[in-house]
Length: 314
Image 1: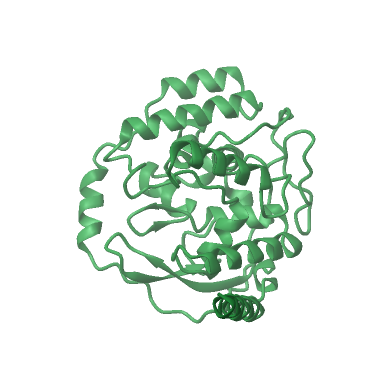
Image 2 (image 1 turned 120 degrees about the vertical axis):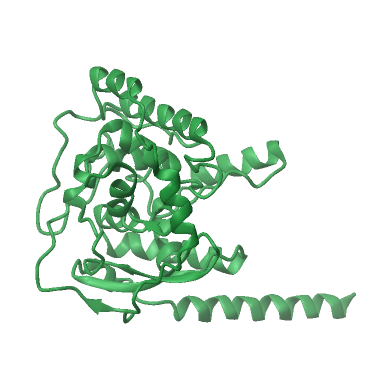
């Protein structure tokens, strides 16, 4: 028994040393603060193959925060991370709620990753579901919150989220589904795209489960109205609209059959000398504090958003 305890202690010490060394070797976060920086990350297409993806101004679909509709930003925040402006990378309250939900349902269906954690995972880590990867994700999220503004974190998130077969980022997604730029998205379209985020490949794929996506988008719209992001008239107008995605199934089928290869890029490229637009953050819900955008004050929606509550995610 004593030998087993000693062996277990040795294994724990070795694992702890591995985690400490792994954390020390993680890449610097400061490069992400530079809005001219482009870097190459790995993403998976719908066949499971790793593809190179350029994150930054050298990606033709890259969309600075100031060119994304405020409704789109708030739809994502209310759907994915309602306490975004309150936490420092980790939402302890959401973690407790997720644990309680999973214990009641006897499953691991409900996650509690913040937007910051998702950025850390998408930019720096693999998709493996291990304790060590989760620890790295938590550590990177904490570091991001220390070195980046909330608006910059949200900008990175919106430019790397998956919305279709090799459709990554809101710039590509808004054009792919609606043929318009992110600045032109309506509240209904914004809620529709945000509703897809938990699983655009299967669970919230609009071609397989359109009704499910619409129901979740309706819930997001209700939250947007409750928080004062949209007016009563805008809410009723949005509910009356049906997103026009007809005819895109052929496009999806065709893209799944193609070998979509991005040209290889270096891992830390400098962007073109053209300065990207200054970031404009969504105004935080009253009682929350959003860090000021680098170089300017954030652009505010015309109406003041009332007090925030928990996220509207399912």
